[in-house]
Length: 255
Image 1: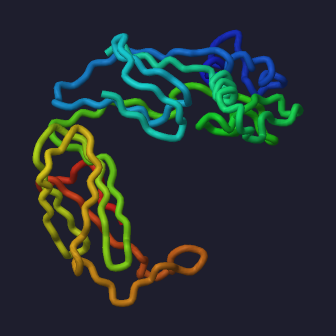
Image 2: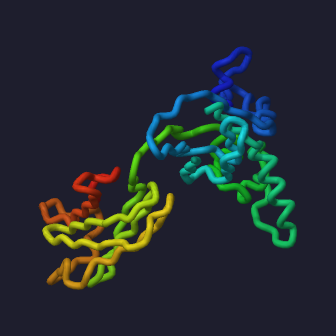
Image 3: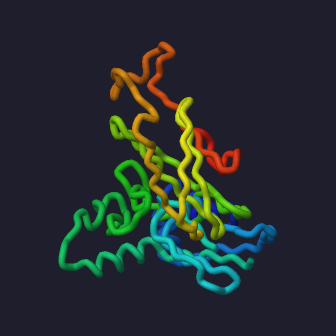
């Protein structure tokens, strides 16, 4: 919010002279972002918030569709769009009062920092409540992109792999319409097919094991020397590709 307000008269740069103290009232107020948009005609359309700073209620055409309280995660909601921000200073103070039985230090920064208290009760950039090297600007706003994502059948949101010495597991986060689906896995030159007999709901987490012997390593290295991979071409990487119907399902290959 301070970065946006400095573009409007009579606001000045918050870093000029003692403006960090003069503008402390900004973090004590609640603020609302609003906009209008048109949605596509696809079967599934998601509203994605990559970064919301921090405590807010999201309404769509007057209906509450979600709440946020964590600056460091992404939020997804299912065409006047409003994001109503609560003062992070007030929120942190209220959360502290709700946990009086156990003191969580530090309660407040040193007086010389002229900062705000109880930053450890909010999932937010800690330095915004003041630090020894910077002023107190408890920010609010959309610090990452907001976008619409539409799809008709299936969307692969996240792909990760977990090596367990002789076993591999795939962890898939999928969103889509209700349908039966097949996961096609390929690790190096070995291909395996696993058919999921359950019906995929609108949101599902699936753990897919790689069959024994699908990927074997004679002498496996689980570490490398300090300073990064060797300068030679023998980097310890393995390419993993996930496809749906012969097409990449919204996620590039991982190495």
